[in-house]
Amino acid sequence: MIKKIFTAVFLFLFTTAAQAEIVVIGNLKNNLQSLNSIQVEDIFMGRTRSLPNGRIALPIDQSALRSEFYQKLVSRPIEQINAYWARVIFTGQVSPPTLLADDNAVITIVNENKDAIGYIDRKNLDNRVRILLILN
Image 1 (tube, helix red, strand yellow):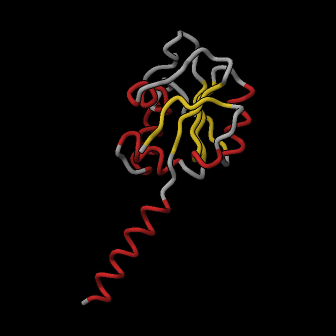
Image 2 (cartoon, rainbow, N blue to C red):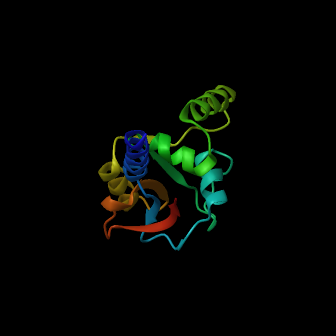
């Protein structure tokens, strides 16, 4: 019995520690100081193309955190997000966010493009970008 409890506690701690603290980032030259979760959701789900300052957003997804990001942002598994985008793309209304491989690629693009927003693991954050939102 004690072994089962120990195993359950260990698994809980391990899976909790394995999750990234995801931060939504933006370019330092963009005058945005922050975004709320609804604004980020609307941009990444293609419901709006504009940032709150009126500029056209360039949302950036990334392979390594994509599933966890959408689970935290909209409480949906990645399969539902993929199905959603398949429907939206079919109608020709809007394109999904650009998909990059990892945090470094996202930081580079966001640093180079004033209107780009992306997400990374907070542990890889550096001074080239600004935190707009923290997803817990």
